[in-house]
Image (cartoon, rainbow over all chains, first blue to last red):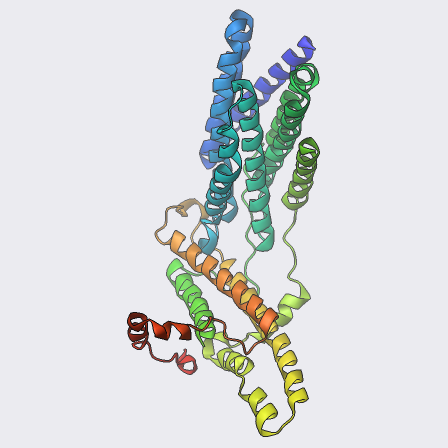
Length: 253
Length: 176
């Protein structure tokens, strides 16, 4: 099991380095600045915790949890960046991704995450539960973003679709394995489940490496005859206002 | 029990994301095309005249009270309810099409911090909220029900009543 764990660690580091170097080489690091900053953090954090696990094994748990909690929070920022890419070309809903991310995060934080954090229990159980609930929150944000894109019939670029699929893959495994750890206790986690999460993250990195191999912006189809042509924000704002006015007058009638 | 719920959520999450993330742009359904024709002329007032007619109860009262055909009047209400729902859905289709309009600037020069983008989102969300509410009221109570609840009981509060008297009637006919 130890060799398996080390192999996954090395594969993960190699994939993270590949992702960053490829983007740097092709010059599209700046297209996803938060994602590549996150990748750099994961690479540095993984390498450091890997070293600590060999050199100072008794400090490993503390270092890992610090690294892991910062990672959990950084992923919210990355999801927000992905959401911007989905809605960016459409001025009327450009901020919809951020809105969904903020609303879902705030709602689940208040109703689902905070009540669990306030319960008196051991720190390890509380940390695992926080990780579970944060992962589920991110999963739901991704599902909500995709549902909004589906509703508006928006095309996703290969990069964005891959990032979301990768996140969903590893978040799903995290949710299931952390819930199992909470239910069946530490023994099961130590023997089986602790290997599931690195494996899921490695799979996620494989998906990201394939889909982020080159930058592929979404191709916007030109409007068909009779459809509204591209228009400025001011003209769009005016037309949205008119729709609202028409409906408001109808409601007040 | 909680583990089962989390496992189901995890599986559903993967399935939903895998299905939605690999979507290709969907073709516009035939229903949406028909709805678009329904609201043609929205900006020249023809569509609003149609909406006034749909939501006006004069025909219903004329049939029921003046001609004395209550059953026919009820049938008219049901028919108008269907048309009202269709009109509201058509308005939504037309609105969604406008929302999907891309910006004319090149992708590279597109600024995420463009002034008013939150305002545009507010207009979009507000429209969806109002439309959802209107659809709910029309489905539950029919097209002739007041879409905004009556505040007549507020006449017992003198201050509110005097403030309300400054508001004139809405002139929907002159909406251009």
